[in-house]
Image (cartoon, rainbow, N blue to C red; front, side, top):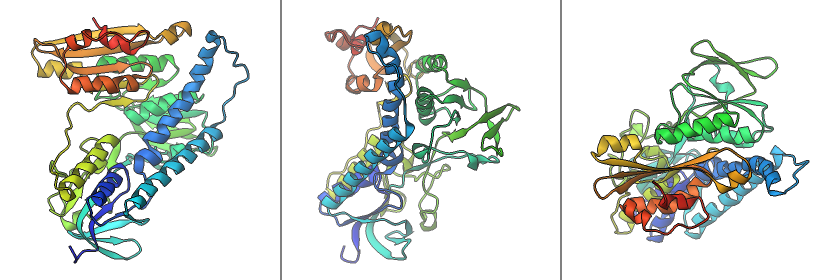
Amino acid sequence: MADFDYDLFVIGAGSGGVRASRIAASHGARVAVAEEHRVGGTCVIRGCVPKKLLVYGSHFAEDLRDAKRFGWNTEGATFDWSVLRDNVAAEVNRLEGLYGQTLGNNKVEVFRDRAIVTGPNSVQLSSGRDIKAAHILIATGAWPSVPDVPGAGHGITSNEVFSLPELPKRAVIAGGGYIANEFAGIFNELGVEVKLVTHGDRVLRSYDDEIVDRLVDLSRQKGIDIHFHFGIKSVTKQDNGTLLIEGDHGEVIETDLLLWAIGRTPHTVGVGLEGVGVDLGKDGSVKVSDDSCTNIPSIYAVGDVTNRAQLTPIAIREGHAFADTVFGNNPRTVDYACIPTAVFSNPPIASVGVTEAEARAQYDDVKVYKSDFRAMKNVLADRNERALYKMIVAGPTERVVGLHLIGPDSGEILQAAAIAVKAGLTKQAFDDTVALHPSMSEELVLMK
């Protein structure tokens, strides 16, 4: 490969790109990565990590209210958005430094530059430098979608929400997915008057209907105003700085902030892929084979840009598998079955396997076991908020094919239980496991 500057050139230093770079370098490859924004990508810089920290911060509002029932005097407690915002930003900066350090320790050269693919084995940096590489990996992720409606630019996206100079008094969140529901919970607990609007008839479409219905009910009880069948027709900024949002049925909402959370689009615009003949999907995603290769043998893609599963752990696994396959003499692919996921709404949702509706469409013999309960903490706090756990089983052996939870710490509880679903264990295996008491997770082995 003497004719090439690098064995691997990666465009995008997010979760997938960093993992692929590090592992390829550990296999002896000469690796470079170009990143036009910040090392760490969406998850670390403007996604999962800062979002989860805001979730933690917002939960103190309920904890402080509940604390009185546990004997604590919290009179006079106040909240300062700038403190939370700046501490979260500082943690993001720390993590960005660690990601850069990891690349440096593995002798991966980092170009803080935009890169465009100019050929099967060539890229050009915005500085004008041309680079030759034996393999090119596209790991540019996805970007928040903004609709083509008049005044859409008056809204913000998840890219900007973490650096708000101050919290708005009122916020409209457009969308029904992860980001919409998570920020609805965050803002609501921080004292913002929240309206969540979506053009469809439900939110979180990939999740179990009964679990989602419970979230909608609890969200409304907590003060989140949810509007279904509400498409946004236009956005107008008034002289006093507030926004007027007109719905497609004539409804008008006045607000101080509009957050677009209607999905994320694979980030392929301006990367040069079409010019070199890389096949793209209608949504702009890079089409790849099971081993992450495009129709151009020297060009690969991993992570959200492929739109296989827009999840950080998946991007990491894809990047690792790519590097092992191409540079480590260990061909392997990623298994996309039984991926555990969570929505850090208030309360959070966690899920693995098929929903009840999916199970009934796939299997002849389906049973559903449930536990509908109040967490012990909520009982003493006098909080009438019930958790719901569902177990979906199929066949004569009652193999567990789905687990769906809504309630405190659902994501933490589901991770270990997802191993059982992935392993194909049965309901009897859960029944045979002694309950860990007192805990919420014991409900997993006590379902009827």
